[in-house]
Length: 304
Image (cartoon, rainbow, N blue to C red; front, side):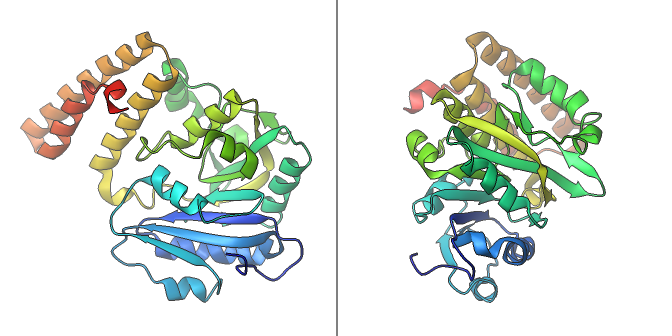
């Protein structure tokens, strides 16, 4: 990838997208990066996770030297990211979802924040789906109480206040929908944990950065549009399963046995509700119910 540079001076960032059935948004995102931050970027890698339709030529019309990696099937977000990371050699790496669009100056602000303090391992912007709405894309240490607050407080009331944030702040985690990370920090934690198929892999990554002494910083003056859910909307039932599996694995890895058992109890109640829906309304796939049932008793320690 030595020649995979965009016009401009002193490019320092390698960009990594993981795409799944979201070509249109991916093209828009690439165009926004080209228009707002081309001089900062020296590499662009796209890992396509088994999309039925993917047009590499359309991407090369935007960035002629882009590198595309094609997976025959969806190997998961974490594994696909690790594939792409192996192709990048820049000092700073931008992990970004296809359904994002960069505002002018956003990436430069993130980069300057990261460069100005060698203790910082990763930085992220405020994410917005538009119309002055904001997504909760960061948070403190995650536990059952915090998840409850996030569902009923942080996702309903708190987002209205996010646009007023102006000062950088230390956080427990940032969303990998848009995450600028230092290569050295990423190398120390050896990338993503591939036991996460979808969801929680970014929170886990930030946790491990902080355990190694790196700072994780929200930069609220950097603003990036993020539509969210464009790849998963077609597979809601399996998306819900992978969310719960990753949640349970995350709790097993980072939280107390009491919280893990409490979460398993909640999943048992959820499974009963899903079975009821399937019995009365036939709204649940039988395979999903079987997968949920196996998940409740899954022992992650046996997986190595």
